Each structure stands twice: as structure tokens, then as C-alpha cells.
Length: 356
Image (cartoon, rainbow, N blue to C red; front, side):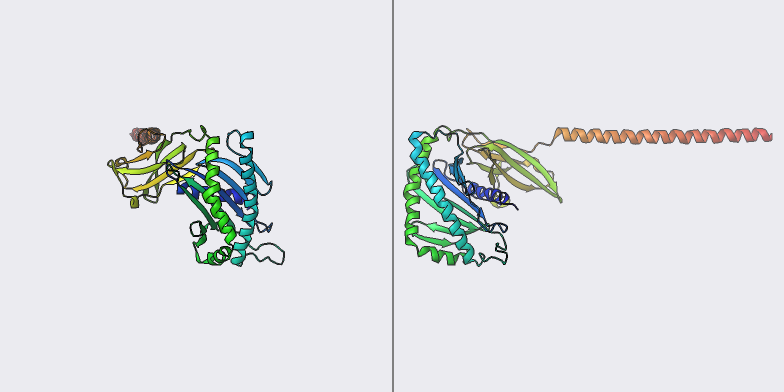
């Protein structure tokens, strides 16, 4: 996998994680997503960063160009130049921090050793999500989490000024980072003071664009595989991300344990898509319906699976043509047999007459 392909994969993993976390409909959030991979052919970690206000991408940065790029149609004028400078300095600083942390974690896993050729023997990935959420009552909550090779690894706890290890392998890094009390205090200051302040200024900057809504397009599809019938409810092209999708049987909500978890992912154009699946008995599909709730909807939207009329029509036409062909062939065969019988009868009469 090339240097550019792996960060793209990490992006999907990270955005999937963010999408499943969600937030209160009356709150606002500022999130920064960092991703990187140690490439065996380069021997150096790659780094890319994305910044989101609520569900809208507004800034990006990558280590290769070292450029901070605006990604939202907001007006970054002279009044917001200081804010942009702060964001740029933060992202460039986090670039350095990310690479140092990456090497520290790999070293603590005994994975930073190089081969005789001077390159890493295998590739590893690091993902970070950090930011804050401001509630309707103006209270705040900060978060700072690390994921390593696709698994939860470390989480910063600002109230305790320490790190929680999500797996045994993270204990060494946890103890090493907790020795640095200055870093812990800087992390807490950002999460509790700087991040909420930035978020409020960004909300002012993105006013109007952040309030726009895109209603979900909902449909239910039908799939049969290995004798299992599955109904899949899809909600497409909606914004904001907050959405609730549930299955009803005979208009009554199903128990959550009987339904696959709801899955929501970004489309890449600022909107989202979500789906939830359900295994049903063949012939009972019409008893089930999918109910969708979204901030842009005045009331819940309900959809059911409708058998395709075109598919049924095509099947009927094909069956009819097949029957006609069979009848036509049977008719030809019947005529041939009658002609043979008639020929044999005429030949018999001729022999008899000749004998007389």
C-alpha cells in the first residue's frame, strides 16, 4: 500500500469512529482527527489532520506539504486572522507531537527497531481524536484519545491529569507520559479553556452554513443469501449527522438485541449516510417497517420494502416467452410426427395395391 493510500484508509476508520460517538442535538463540538502510518519503504510516519466543527469539515493539514488549508466556505477575513494563526500553529505543533508520540509507542512495543536495510520491518498505524463539546447550558467536556493499529490505546483524563490505558500494552507509555506533568497541564488547559473558546469563535464564523439541513432519503432493500432474508434500511445524503433509525414489527419497536447496530458514515461531500439491517423470515417482509428521525424532519419518516414491479414484470415476460417457445417446439414436433405417420400410411396403401 502506497504512502497516500494508507492515510485514506485511516481517514475512513477515524470518521467511522467519530460518526458513532455522536453528540447531543443541542450541543456543539470541535474535533481534530490525526492519522498516520509508519511506511516500511520510507521508515517515517506519515501525518494528516482534519478539523470538524459539529459535523462540518473546516480545515485540513498534512505533513508532506506542511500547509493548513481551509475546507469550509467561510470567510476568513482580517477579523479572524488571529484565529487562523492559532489554528495553524496548533496543527504544526501537533504534527511534531504526533510523530514523537508515534515513535514512543512503537518503541514501547519493541516495534521501532530497523532491519539491516535501515527500514521498518512492518507498518503500524496511529490515530488521535481530540477536542471539546459545549452543551446548551454552557458546560464543556474535553476528550483526547489515541488508537494504535486499529484498537483503543490511551485516553487522557483532564480531571485526573493522567492517562487511562485501554489495553495492557499501553501501560509503559502511560507511565512514561504521566511523568511529564507540564504536558498534562497543557493538555487540560487546551481542552478546558482554549478549545471551547476556539469553538465559540468558529461557530460565529460558520453561522448560517452550520445551520443548514439536508433531509434524509430513506429506502428499504431486500437481500437473500444462503437461505437468509435480510431487510436493509438506508438513509442517504442527510445533514447534520444526528439520526435515529429503528425497525418496527407490526408498528411496534423491536428489541435492540434483535437488530444490527446502526451504522453512520460520511459521504465526503459534507452529508452522511446510515443504515440498519434486520434478518426476517421469508414471506414476512411486509410486517416490518423502518422508522427514521432526523432534526430536519417535522415528524418521523417510515419506509417499507416494496417488491419491484419491474422485476416481477420481467420475470413474467421471460416465463411467458419460455412457455411460448416450448409450445412452439412441441407444435413443430407434433406436425413432423403426423407427416411421418401420413407418409407411412400412403406407402402401405401403395404396396397393397401393387400386390393385388
